[in-house]
Image 1 (cartoon, rainbow, N blue to C red):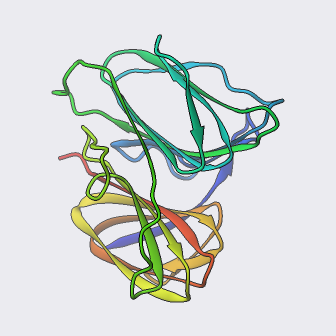
Image 2: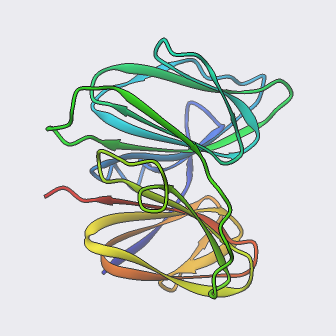
Image 3: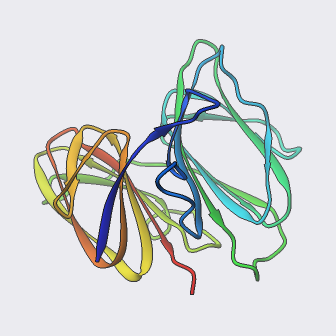
Length: 227
């Protein structure tokens, strides 16, 4: 099993973007092309940009705003909104904050398998708070089992919040690459300390132990690694 902690790196061209994949010390990690967090304000907006041969998750962590893709109507988004854009062929999307709002979101970009269907589609949902488990955590299923959103690339994403001090054990799988990105607070992933803005990269592991104090929150991203 390999667990490496990667510090988030502020973009050289945009100080509102913090990336853990890729960075100067961690290149793309196929099929993961990008895992990054963005903060946008009404004064700092983001133009539409295109994707092709990729699947893109946009998860709203805080704030509210508008999401658009292709020539489809604009959709309102708020904290907990989930959008998964599957783009085997080229399509553009954009997200921007509402009036007077600061918008914070997590973006995950993965390469689609070569045999993917050519249909562009967008799946949208709202993350719901589940019950607090015996281990002191509340888990929101964003993509994959427990969520209405299904990924063509096999992506699974969860939002884990520690309501109480504790330790939770999460299955990963020896054929899976996982990124545990700290959204708030501090904790550890298999004994490696992780603070807000950092990520633990996990490979060749049947599972990991995640420990945190109340207030620790992380996004757990899992995807099958290439053959």
